[in-house]
Length: 203
Image 1 (cartoon, one colour):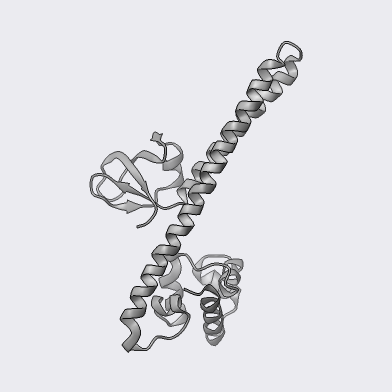
Image 2: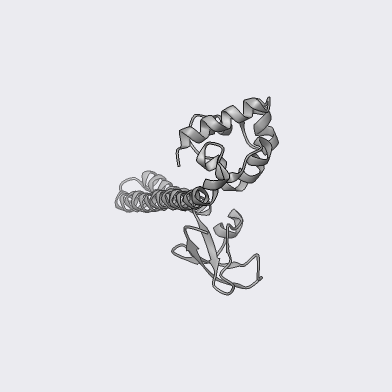
């Protein structure tokens, strides 16, 4: 999958349709900056809007992923290759997000612990400095924990252990759920069962 090739393909089709980046973005409910990133090959359109984008441009999803019109005799082979490439790219993206999420979480914990320990050591000498250090340490761990949790929402899916449905939950549900690691107690939007839902990287 060649992002630059796909980007040029989107750009040419958009111009054929007589659409500006701003008009296309408005029809898709996104920013024109996102369209610009596609067309310069910096990123691919999200899976959630690919179908709508293809309808506007008058192409299939396979043609979008390939970056060109596809002849019918090659269609099945190219479709299978595009599906495999899409799964691989999603896995790579989600693994990077997991690494970032873990780094932010551990960085926040370590820095806050250092500040809290330093605060307790200087408490007798300077109570004000101690309060500042301990408060700052608490604020850092809280901020990084919330940020890492929100990042987790954008990373992969959750799988219901009852019906095996994989879904992306609302950020509020993730933030306020009981959890152990990345597994969380949530309600499945498909079967309605509440229980431990496992974090998975692909759908």
